Image 1 (cartoon, rainbow, N blue to C red):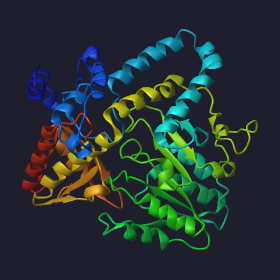
Image 2 (image 1 turned 90 degrees about the vertical axis):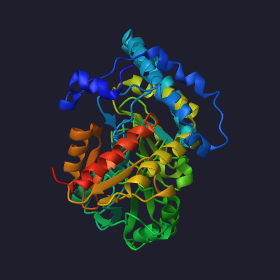
Image 3 (image 1 turned 180 degrees about the horizontal axis):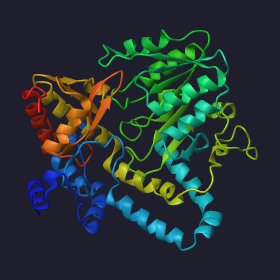
Image 4 (image 1 turned 30 degrees about the vertical axis):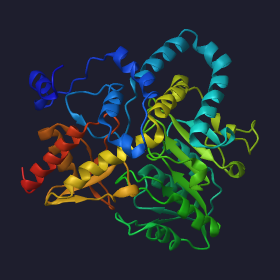
Amino acid sequence: MATRREFLARTGAAAGAVMLPVLDPGAAEAVLPLLSNWRHEGADDAAQDEAFWETIRRAFHQSPAFVNLENGYLSPQPESTLRALEEKIRAVNAGPSYYMRREWATERERVTRELASLAGCASEELVVTRNTTESLNTVIGGLDLRAGDEAVMSDQDYPNMLEAFRQIGRRRGVTCVEISLPLHPRGDDEVVEAYARAITRRTKVILVTHMIHLTGQILPARKICDMAHARGVEVILDAAHSFAHIVFTLPETGCDYCGASLHKWLSTPVGAGLLYIRRDKIATVWPLFGETAVAVDDIRKFERVGTQPAWTTAMIPEAIAFHRAVGGARKEARLRYLQNSWTAKAARIPGVTLNTPGGSRSCAIANVAVRGIGAAALADRLFERHRIFTVAIESSAVQGVRVTPHLYTRMEDLDALVAALADIAGAGGKK
């Protein structure tokens, strides 16, 4: 098999061309059965077992034209899920109306039960959506917030959620209180206190991002929720990046409402998410789409969304099967090991700044900056000169490049990133 360098030379990718690989479905699908027989002493032991992760790598097909270190936006599907999706689309296409009228409701219930099992909640508290934005907009727009009420959020929350609150502010007169969070907190108390200081007698709800998309920082969700509840304030949790990335259950976070995107770290087809609402809170949230035929305290009132690509939802159990075969603890440990490995080396490069806390305060995602060069220019330089794909983060809270490896990422790819950063930093950010 040609090396990446040979491939680039042959195809002209160094000049900008990007080509996708020829797939070998048989080899990739054979990975899943192998994983159930692999044993480790513990997650940390598994994290450094390169033979194990090389086996898992075979389940994914990635372009050899560049190193993909931007898996935070979307995760690729393992071949087992992709092939099942193709088969499902063909099966539904053979009788789409029949499937949607006779089989879809039953299959959706089965999928919901399996997803609820992974999330650690009751299926009566969970509904499948298209993504985190849809899930949390449903809650933000569905709460009975009124003029004079306050909602607390941070400058590091996802823009779609901030925009949802801003629109409620314009429409209903709700005050949006935006706080700043430290990039490198001294401890959980510093983060919790940042939210606590913003709470007044008018505060009704707090938006908390479990794993911040800008930097990968993991917030102490349970402690924030406990603090907020003690003050009579509800909590909306954005788990877009934490769900199926780090090990936790939704009830363990203590949140009242939660949204997550399954096409991120669970690696489902694009267009799958979840909405969790604690059982005693369901009746207080209006659905985004009209629904009066279902009881107000029934989570199914959020399912009247019109015709949709049912095969995407039907693939969630396939993705769960792969996730369980890898093992949630092994997955988290590996992703953290990859990030800690490259950031430890990058931290020693003069002119390089890391905007992500280490240890258990982060996992796969990290944010890096080079003195003298803007985030967009750094991302461009990494791709154009070194064929490393990342994404520029330019916000009021942080400026840098987000780096997100995945289960298929090799250590040599991260070593190439570190070498590229050293090269760019050595040039003083100049062309």
